[in-house]
Image (tube, rainbow, N blue to C red):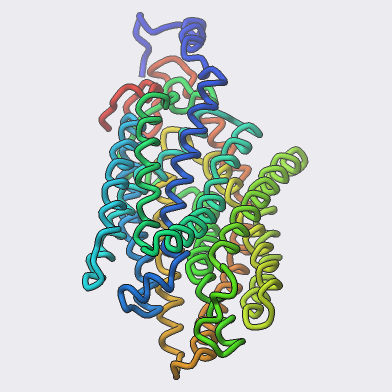
Amino acid sequence: MTLENDTPEISDISTSTELLTLLPEKRAKVTVTILIVVNLLNYMDRFTIAGIPNYVQQYYSINDDQFGLLQTAFFVSYTLLSPVAGYFGDRWRRKYIMLMGLMFWVAITLASSFVPAHLFYFFLLTRCLVGIGEASYSTIAPTIVSDLYTGSDRTKALGFFYFAVPVGSGLGYVIGSAMARWTDQWQWSLRVTPILGIGCILLLIYLHHDPPRGQAEGAIRLTATSWLVDLRSLLCNPAFVLVSGAFTCVSFILGAVTWFAVQLIEMGINARYDDPTAWRMYDVPLIFGICLCFSGIIGVLVGAFLGRYFRQYLPTADALICATSQFVCAPVLFAALLAPSVNFFLCVVLVFIVDLLLCISWALVSDITMSVVVPNRRATASAVQMIMTHALGDCISPAIVGAISVAIADSASLEMRFLSLQRALFLTPFVCVLSAFLFCTTSLFVVPAKDAVHKFIEESKLPSGVYEPDGGIPVSPSSDIDVHA
């Protein structure tokens, strides 16, 4: 392809890109802060019901199997809508996509709190629909953070962003159980996040700003390619596929453990004292929620720090740190599952360590993913990764564990109910080992993938018409411009 006479010179391009300067530091921080707050609310809502299992099971007269379906139903829609959000997230204004999803999430979550006791499956449907709203946000937000920062700053920003995972999950347990006790109506637990969500909608409208796609890395001329081309590129990227597979295992473990942990601990206490009300001796959801918050914060901080430090000496440090944390986590998780019927406080300590080790990988996985995928495919990459991590991870793990628990329980005694759930959860330490193996394998492909991304970005800085990968349509990096692929 030849250059036209009016094609700008390299110097002109350099001058024009100076106008696309990085967002002022304060504006970038405000944008990331808003994304963190919304992510916090997402995870609060996601684990509110997990903090009040006895209330929900008694109200709807359901067993472990049906209770596990509540989380699975949520992730079904969450998983199915992720690729749609990812497709539009690479092509349209991300701010509006997130706003529409957040408004839908607020409305459905509030509506779910009014479903009567005889309509359990309608309640199940509302929890399924909640995933639609959350998918539109969770797919896009990490790509915005990645467009604001690079290198160690990106790791740090993503670390803060993923604080919302443990902190939001922990607050979901705490607020869920607290509201159920204070109001004597567990439904009020589901009404807290929608109220706070209205404030987040206002923040997104008035204070949030989309950075140009790829701006932090200096990309100038990005191209929008078809979704099939994007998908083919991602599936042919071994670093992306392997890190997504490894994180799917982490997601499987977290989905099963966080959903059934409170119930397992309460059952262990009941079995130890042979009293179905013995669990009231301890405020398990509150203690577990606080434990989840602090262990998660420490885990994300430790992971981000180790990644920034060891990356100076070893380019594959992120993947190897994740692998090590999973290897160590496996035996600790096994011990934690044995502890509820032995000693409550020992169980709390072990759960703290397990969650810390699992959370080490959160920011690092996102950092790896964003660094091995070109900027104009990151929302799609995030969506594909979500499909993998949820469809094969926390979407199915609660249902699988619940089904195994019901299948192997041969009596309704307190001890057998505890043992059946405990044995079902013994699946998770083995998944931990598989995750560690996949992270180790990922480390073999990270460096070549990062080099390919760097080459792509450098070539995007060439004059218009010199480089158009995959026959794509050259587009402005500004996310304020709608582009049809």
